[in-house]
Length: 460
Image (tube, rainbow, N blue to C red):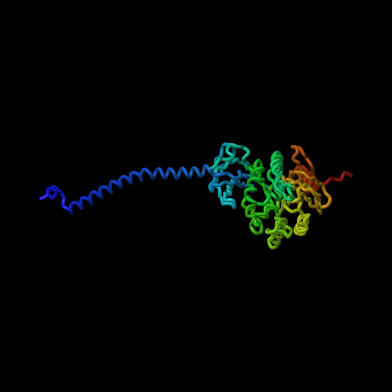
């Protein structure tokens, strides 16, 4: 017998069972190691995901600083643009004391960033509050008193507003082609001069940008207007330049939070009340002489019908209308001038022509205010006689129940007054005069009744 036969401790069958036991032991060891690594890896992976989320928020890009929109006697909207979809607005009654929070609503614009809107609600008329915003990037406006919003006044309160237009970047002629003139940056100068006079709201009569791209709104409009839009609502009208690359005005509608009381529910035209003035914004570019791709005869007819009802319904002391293409264009004049005269419109602000002009037709004051920053016109204005000049400028209007005091300023200095006129309101008795008149009537009634009760005796 061979010693190997006697030394072999296991039979082949037992050797096989032993191998299986060893495999089970090895598998259990591997599983124990895997569970150990999994217990270690899960927290690490969660921490990594959380860190990536934080990093994504920290790297969010702010593309439009906050700007105030649509002030009513009880609320104000604040908008901004960011690459993050989430945002929060904090507000309170004083800088540094932000006791209220509002999560923004947002949607993606055509550039892939997000348009944020947050409403500050529950305000008293003319109440001012302070705010800041946070969208996961830098916090904007905290402890800065210039970031504030004011609710509209109630009743027929007096207030100041501004009007201007055609603020798009200037152009110059190079080899027969108009190209942006980056040496002329007048929009920022116009805004800074305007801000120094503290208007409660601003009207813009159109041509804010050159072609209607989102990046142009960001760089050519909101950036230079930042000192004023962060605390003052701007109400805008569509110009032809907003439509060249965006004929259906999607970018325009995305950028602003304007009233939607038009016949079709869009922001292309609308109206609102503020203090003693009823404002109506119109879309001249859908008329037959407007911008290709945006012209729409059916919508224009609906707008005209809406305009007549809007002007007929208001009982405000003053009616102001604003739009882009002036009534020197025959299609604009034919569409609206008779309604302005029939319903007593007091003042009409227009643009498109890059200069200032004021003239009166059948009791309506027409103002062309196209000096917001674009290259100035070389040709004389249309519209017949009237005051005009060619320079960058803005209009500042003090409105009260007694009148509209209109002053037009250039940008060469703080006191660069170029033109002024006054529209007088209907005579309204002073409160003191009314009291004196009533007192006199009461005294006369008392004397008459006394004489009736105690007739004069005949002494003859």
